[in-house]
Image (tube, rainbow, N blue to C red; front, side, top):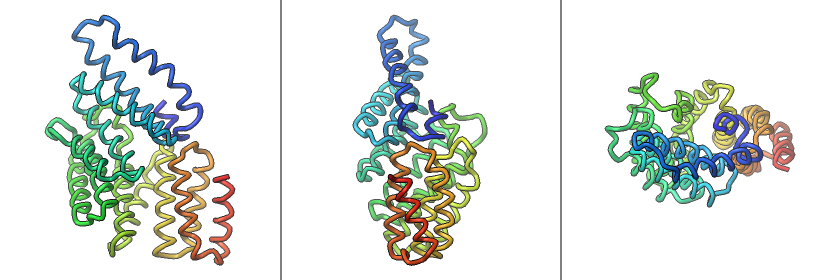
Length: 287
C-alpha cells in the first residue's frame, strides 16, 4: 500500500484496498496471543494504521487521518516501539502544519523527539524538519533555521540499515525536500534569500527515486512557485510543466492544492505566453 500511495497518491483504490485489512488486523488485537509476540502484533497494526493515516491525509480525509494516526500512536506505545511512535508523531505534526495548525504541529514534533537517544538519526532529522516547517509557518525564522541545522546534523550521522522499513523513504532527496519546503515558507514571510530553498528543492527533484513521484511533484511545484515569485517566469513555467507531467497521474489532494497555489502565483505574469499556456494546463489538470 505504501508503494502505491507514494507513486499515485492517497485517493481511490489505494485507500479502498486497505480498509478491510485494517479492520481485520484490529480484531487480532483482542485475540489471545503469547505475551512475547504482543509487541510485534501491536507494532504491525500500528504501521498499517500509519500508512492508512498518511493516505487519508493525502486524500484530505483529515478526521479519518487523525483517528488512524492517533490509533497507530497508541499501538506503538503499547508495543514500546519508540521508532514507530516517532514516525507516527512526525506524520501528525505534518498534517497539522498543512491544515493551518502549526502550533499543534510543533507540539507533535517535539513530543516525537522525547527520548531522542532512542531514535535513529533519520528520525531525529525528519522530526526536526517538521519542527522547522511549523516554526516557519509561525513566523519564527531564527528558530526554523536552527531546527534545519539540527536536522542536517542528525542526517549527516545516518547509516544504512539502522532504520525500520517505515523510514525507507527518508533519503537524501526527502531530507532536502522537507527542509526546502521550510525554507520556501521562510522566503515568503521574511527577507530570507530564495537561494537555499532553490538549492535544496533542486537536490530533492534530481534525487527522488521513480517510486516517489508524489514527493518529486511536490518539490517541483514548490520550486516553480518560488521561481515565479523571485526569478524568471519562463523558467518557472518550464519547471511547472515537468511537475504537471507527474501530477496528472496522481490522486493527491495535497498535490492539487499546491497547483492551485502555483496558479495564484502566475497571475502577475499572465501576459507571458509561457505562463499563459501553463495557466491553461493547470486549469485542465485541476478540472
